[in-house]
Amino acid sequence: MQSAGQDTGTSLRRSVLPRDVAIGGFALFAAVAMTAFIALTLFALLVHSPVVKIVSALHREVVLQALVLSLRTTLVCAVVIVIVGTPLAALLARPFAGRAAVETLITLPIVLPPVVAGLALLLAFGRAGLLGKALAVFGLELPFTTAAVVLAQIFVAAPLYIIAAKDAFARADPDWTDAAATLGASPAYVFMRIIMPPAFPALLSGLALASARALGEFGATITFAGNLPGVTQTMPVAVYMAAQGDMDSSIAIAVVMLAISYGALLGVRLLGSGWGRR
Image (tube, rainbow, N blue to C red; front, top):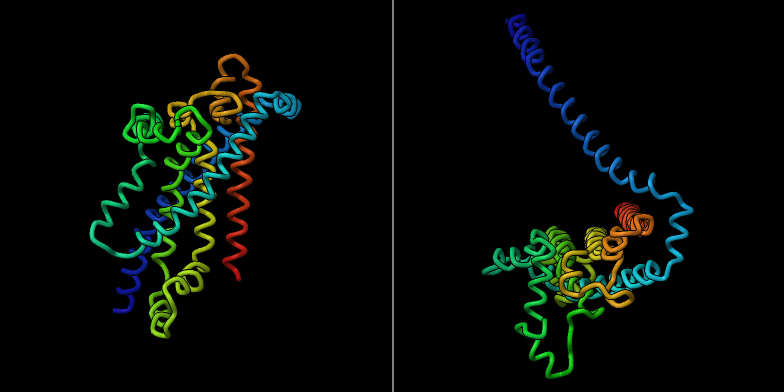
């Protein structure tokens, strides 16, 4: 009997082992292939843009203007996203009627083609748009201004932060929040002292993703804000325009964007790891 059981176990292991090896081998191949694909594609930018060319391109006025404008608008975009997106994420973390519809609406800009997003912004806030005429009464014109750049960035980037924040808030321990409420803590106190601290790494990561998305926004920006050097010409727009006749400048700006985005994401991950070990 024991021998029969051992034989069955051995045969089962023999039948499972090749399948496990095959699955593990495929997973390893897929991981290496995807990593190599991304790394090789990004490395091509570095190979075709020596440091001397990058430094030379960065001294050009149009490149400096695009760099400063992108960083400034991205910073404003990030501040607005945190101020407006955090309460919305906290609301979405709680069950209520119609939450799925609201969450789907908030997430929609992620899957919309950027040009469609820009067209929608133009039809909403343009001179003949839904709110354009009302804004014109107060002397406000948003299209083809720096404010239009910020609006385009917020529209496409905010969902990344809101989704990350919502998921982080939803993971809050209900025992702690219920205990604090029972002891008479206000909702604001519970949110700031109990829910926020463990959610901070996820919020930081979501903000980094949103900021990187805002920094790289092109389609909605050029459709809604246009291409005015020093006013609406962000780095992605400058890359596109420079590629028409000055490939060195185009690659140099692209490399700078790559460095900024990679540095920001890596820094946030390291900071989040350090925070998580506390």
